[in-house]
Length: 447
Image (cartoon, rainbow, N blue to C red; front, side):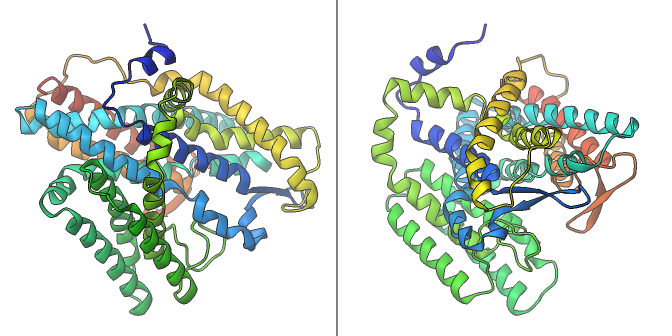
């Protein structure tokens, strides 16, 4: 029997860091709201539907991304949680071979299970639509766009996978480990922009995000004692880089721009992440006291239980709202016009309602699966778990780029230097997930 939200809230131990739970929910919620705000759907004279970006229509609004691009906070929270989880399992385990797969499964269950359901539902729908010959208009756009947020899943998988070695570096060097990653990210941008070294920029997918993740380790050890210095340094660095360097103002990707701060990540985005982490840590005291209120904490507990499901399905809900508007021939105002702003609150409310319906349908998959007997030897589970998380990582990243359209046509997208198709990406993700589950159950039995 599943415990109620009230029971879970009442059973919260006094040692739990409630502020971290709030940051997890708030960061995902801000991303969802940002996507709903930025979507600029238009129809041309030929009836073709396109989804643009409000920030490209109104460049003056790009400064808002310095608050709304809050994904670094989620990765920072991940570092904090991963450090605590790995250390807890390490204290219980006497078997080094079993620790890594057990850690992977423990950290990835609530991430991969709802993700696999999302991929399965959309993959089956895309295949059925193609077999029936249906498509065109907003449907083709949806098949391409709904998979894009999966990039975040791929990056997060990498952070989980690299937690053990980077945690050891942190325990040995402390701030020095973070400084090393920062220096590496700066060197990559120097090679990229000053020396025009090809392909080197992709290294910052690791250095930038893992540096933010490393701040979570420092938080776990109580070493972020002067967050205002981190916030100030990050904000000043980002401002100077944007003002005098080759970096755009927007901290999210803009269509058609030559340089993006996001894909691949830049040193400016790393500075942005530092200022955000410093800022949220700076206000931790008063907010943590506010979270002691029972009603507030129950709301956070409830939201935490469905946050990943809501994140996965929020674009589906938003495009569903636009689909209804188009089906009933309701005019779509020109983005950023007065009519567009008037219609915006209604679209957001409708998207929130539809997201709630989808969450109600799929929320059960976000709960951890029941523990079953191990299916493989723990001695061999470490390499299997490492292979599994690697396949998942490349699978979901590939799917985020190619989308669900053209499953039977061999449509491809370039993932770093490799062409990937949607069926291949789905297969990699599925096989990887099964390996993580199998190896994790074997490891868990020994921990």
